[in-house]
Length: 259
Image (cartoon, rainbow, N blue to C red; front, side, top):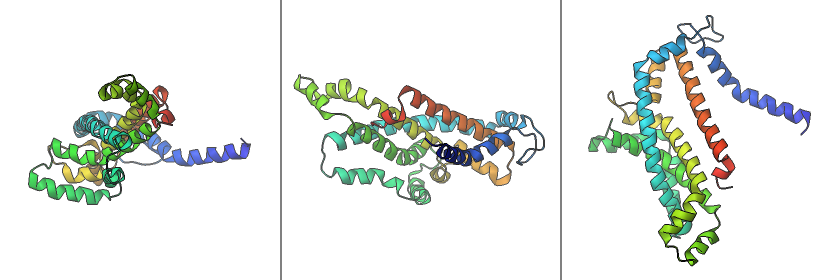
């Protein structure tokens, strides 16, 4: 690798990371408003973040919602991906396009449609409504990742187990599922992050008694922007990076995607 190419890569990385550096520096500010560089350095933003009851409540809702949505998406998405990849169901391509269609729709259109339907059903600002709305976003990611992982598994391994007398359920549990595990883990990570970070659809479905952390942040910055927003951003970036590192260290991204 030539020195010029290394320099170019370094410049590109610096360009991409520059906003994160600004966020990190502004989080250590004692100013009453966001400014770069900060006039007074300190930990006031982090102290305000710890004392913010609305953020703590929203964080708890987002964590529980993300875990529930991830579990539902993994069960439904893995079943759908297995049916498409292994069972050769009629119209598999059409089903795949239907399952991944929410990714092609603008979030505001999908959110408005859910609002109109859930208003009639009484599901606005409820756990079932939020979970269904988030599952529409996370399910396509799970199906895509698990399907890619399945297609990277040699089907002759399953055929060999079946030829030795193993029932289909036993073949799936003892052969297919362990080989799919890296892809399922990567899909779980993507699903949780997508649910935790969802804003547009949540705006249409939350209410005063049930709201997520991104919506609380959205409402806060409408009226003021202080260092606690930067402090929260740093915490969320650290948690996301930690999750990515865990997946990379335990499985590796290429292996998780079935490559």
